[in-house]
Length: 370
Ligand code: UD1
Ligand code: UDP
Image (cartoon, protein in one colour):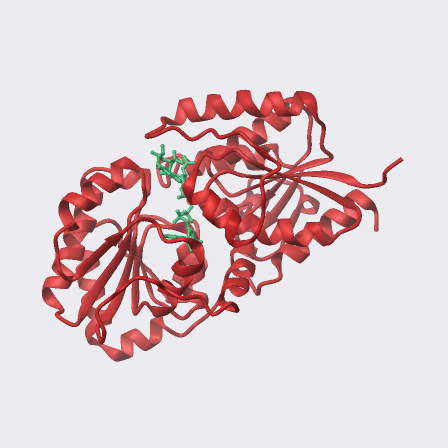
């Protein structure tokens, strides 16, 4: 009889793959663990490139993504496909990461089949169901279905305690995104995109659903204002393939000499872009965690964040998707070296690069009793 424990590790989108890769690699070193990687492929190309960067192959691929998929269709397809998988095979634990539709639907499918769930990056909250949408709901559902809550920070642990979760089920581990960042940074990543020499680089990313429409147009207008005011600035904007984002970005920013639009960068060159950037404008969750660790100021294009630690450390500033606020904050950072130095201090409130090891240790103790 095998004493190995069957561990299902699920990824669906780009950020889940980035943040789960260190966990998969750490689990594969464990003799007690038999790891099955399942990709829902809620994202297709953006997921595949991350798995490749970490030399991980999905053992099961549900190939779910459809162009411009609706949230309900996506949820229904994941639930049905997961149920097929779980009716054939059983697992001692399923690990999910973050707050995407994959996480919510997979946790629910596992609940129905009575498979214990471990939630990686547990306890992030804004307290507002509409911001971010639908992620706040996704992580609340996943949290309520989880047996293990791997919280990245003390404040995410406190959020879970406030909601009544048992202290013994919550483990503060740090965020595995910093493990991934450190692994890639040590490879001396290169950005293979031609950019003008001698200009300060502003890196832009945006994809949040609550910013679709007018807020996203304000963000684009702010980018235009910034390049018009600062001749020594160049913008690099890898555009998210969501059609709601892509069409507007191309229409508003596609023909400006100081703006380079490109398809999503693969993870390794994206880290090189972060390293090269002077300033970052983003509504991304992961970028809010990575950039402070690299000493890069971020203006967050959202009204609320579930990552308050870097805001409190004053290395990330919440400006909202508002043209005037974005331009004013960017102007200050581009013209006042003191303000810039304060925000570019280089702190890492989200992890020390050893989160995956802590998660594996906890699972080993609880599952293998060692
Ligand atoms: C999703 C997550 C969001 C996460 C983001 C990370 C949900 C509801 N949203 O948002 O929490 O922050 O991923 O990027 O779970 N597409 C492609 N190729 C890809 C990926 C996406 O063409 O590799 C296009 C497709 O048209 C797809 C659309 O983008 O239908 C939207 O993808 P989806 O995963 O539904 O939402 P995101 O906006 O990517
Ligand atoms: N990222 C990337 N290429 C890009 C933009 C972002 O590899 O062109 C990485 C980034 O390093 C971070 C992650 O994708 O780790 C964040 O993903 P995204 O912003 O799509 O989702 P979120 O973190 O907001 O859920």
